[in-house]
Image (cartoon, rainbow, N blue to C red):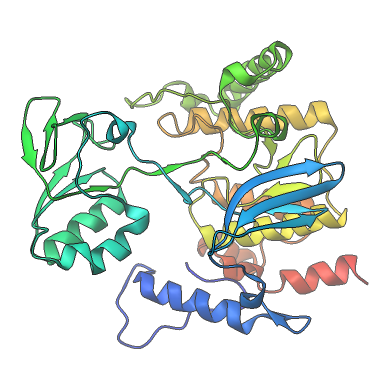
Length: 390
């Protein structure tokens, strides 16, 4: 289930595994080895990575992309390129509830799970930290609860009654406690937030965010764009329901408030009006290794000119259909139009087909009954080179 197609993950004999799921430390070691062992034109992948860089702004002047960044010493530097790949994914910018910024907010340490590794080695080891409050209902919150309990802390885990995310709460003035909306007061030495991530790209201007088709506030659309995409989505939703009638009557579910437009990119990767930039890791799918490998192959072919998106009107209809499928198939999570968690096979098949490569590569019977993994693409690079670089 894990690992890229060219190098399998090798586990020690005593490694614990549960239906293909392994401890994170083995994935970390695998990725560390991967960037060292892959060398191109005399340079490893690791040597091409700038660590400790913070991207402040990305702009485009003419045909040139300009990435403005601060290094670890806060010194400014910039990078220029004719092609841009944005591969920051959806787990880079922490989402912390706005209530913590209000007057009278909790004054003690507040930690998002992005930084929990550091906190667990420092603050949670101190005798002063005994009462831990964890907000959130997902895996990251579960991990923080488990690790805090293992360290002997008294843990209060706060979840909304519907089971989706943290409960509403009010912070008590000063340090040391919070008050829930039901009046319950909880003492705390530290607040741990398993509250997810922001999917916005702060380094793009509002104008670029809109023109590239990234999710944005509906008020930022022009009246013409707003009318166009509203009409496209209405037609697409009817087509999705015609293709999959069962989606017209979903089971009871939470109806989240959608605050942004949908992702308006072809295959969730390519903007419709700029062929010099792609976004990888934006779509939600079930296997990141297989998805990332298929997206990388597609993006390479796209930049090489071997894949072209359809004419604009057809591309818009395709995008609207994917948005509508996401919304109807996943009514609680698909509002942004990029949630296709169980569509891994369909999605990666589509990408490989557009490149002109085989997606089903194990044999007719194995392709029917065995899991679809990144390892299926083992010879895809060779096939690509033979097809296009001969």
